[in-house]
Image (cartoon, rainbow, N blue to C red; front, side, top):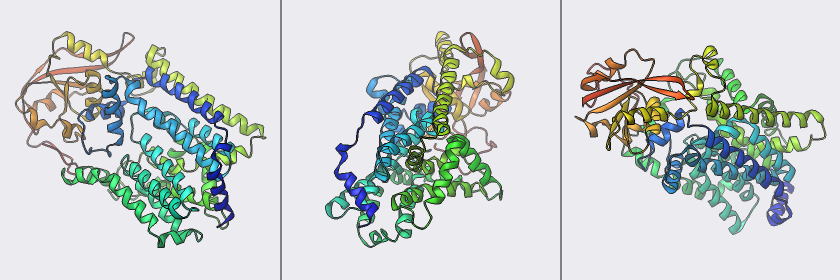
Length: 519
């Protein structure tokens, strides 16, 4: 057994020697801040869509595996409301667990100071500490499960006997939960096998059943997803796989992708992470450090490479699980340099920057203190994106358009998500578009053929009436509604009454052939 492996085993046997109070204080304080932020801001476009489309519980979903959908559905049904803080609550609690797991990994590879500063850095990185930490997105359960898998591997690799089998099995279950959250987890899992292939000390595990039993357990946990896909035309697999296609060669795009990821992580966090990643593959690197780097590398490298040829836009947060694995290494580096004033100032300044940013966002949504100033420098006032459009619901209800059993439709999934969430779970929300995403599976248009439907279209859309006419026997233009914040109109919403809903739009209407459109 190597000296590093012996160190890991000693730490496993002495868990009570670690003082938990600093990390618990950090978790408690940041969780309270996130609860306040969640309670004072409305759901964003993606969040609203997930809650709206996820009202119909399913074994699988079009966009992502079920974990995040089930979490928001479960929270709303358990507490009897879809209030933003309620549907976000599972994700906030999961991030609290993620902080603890990052701390624990830091303790295993170094010491509790490294773990603590790893958790601090995780909190101040916007893509983790703001979006993943509190929004209704698949990244929350994904990150928690991946951290759990990484911690189990750190315990499994130096272990033996039943203890080894237990940790390998736990790693497999966590890996399965990660896949059950987001497909991209497969890249991090591949990093584990990459490590076993390149590390001489632990390559022997490839000749033992443990990693393969872990893989079988992961597949079993993930199994509802391929079952759902097999019975729905492989819709979700096709949709996600299409994002890597297009074959438009752009050799400089990987640099842009990495630059965007650096902004999301914070450049002064990203740069030392890249240095630590490179050091992890040097000869003589500590095995636990190399393991984390092997887990980190595939998401970072693969998404950068895909951006070089794919015609689809690569979103910068997709590679976040790779950077997630580097926080324990960063925490160790910070802990070793806290005697330098510039390091302390950088950490404190980063925390202050993020705290000020979320305060500005929350107070703007609550009080609209910037008024229309944002609209003068941006194409659309982003205040509307962080505001729940309940003013539309009140207007439509006052005009008698939301009677029991009402069916409302939008012409794209983004508007359907925002409006559907604002109207509440008692209103059926349809998406009249070839690209209807999960909305087309939750409430297929065919099920409402012949019905009269209220159609809402967020302006500006000069072709709204013409588009709606392709779906109905006749269309009547009604008085518009408004998205209002503190008396200021942020969006105007065209309201139509469609009579006799059809099932497919105009015969010549363009459809995106890579999507499976449910009938």
